[in-house]
Amino acid sequence: MAEKEEAAAPAPAPAFLRNRYWVLRHGKSIPNEKGIIVSSMENGIRPEYQLAEEGVIQAQLAGELFLEELKENGIPLDSVRICYSPFARTSHTARVAASALSIPFEGPQCKVIEDLRERYFGPSFELKSHDKYAEIWALDEKDPFAQPEGGESVNDVATRLSTVISKLELEFERCAILVVSHGDPLQILQTVLQAAKQEGSTGSEDVVSRLQAVRSPSVLSQHRKFALLTGELRGVV
Image 1 (cartoon, helix red, strand yellow):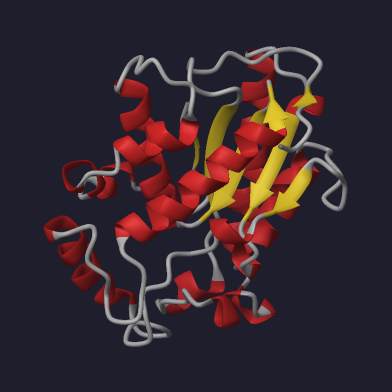
Image 2 (image 1 turned 180 degrees about the vertical axis):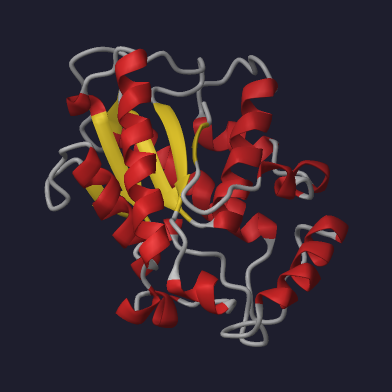
């Protein structure tokens, strides 16, 4: 088990979590402007798919808003951890947000996590028009355990994101964790965390089991209800 890091002051969190979580969808990216789907790791990390000019502004504003929320809640900056997807658009967003918080991006408070990457929609969707998202969302609503050909299902993403949260809960304690990721992963993460929060006491402190228990078709098929705009910051739990 990893050694827990303790912040200077506690931040209130649900009984089953040791930390508080915020999510931030990346700012408007070059793929957003071009209207194309970039979901593979190979393409996602390419620098030409980072933030557009408008997205940089969105990321800056999100960082400033997060700083305001920290101050309002009496949360010290040394308790902040920024965890981000390795894609160019998310790492760019995290870097800008960290700068707004005066947190060194190359320092120990910022951490890239591969499992926060974009949901891979499969080769038949990669680099295609955003119009094809409608096909994915129709499949998700019908069966969130069904995979688009060669891609990830909602449940696949929920599984890896639940693992991320479980690892963060082991690594950190009493921290304010900003998760910088993508539209679908953050919708799915919110769905699972909110369901776990609403579940009430289960008599178990095992985060893995709790998150696993709520990953049912009826819950996961509703992930679109938690959609985020580009550059949108949201407190989750």
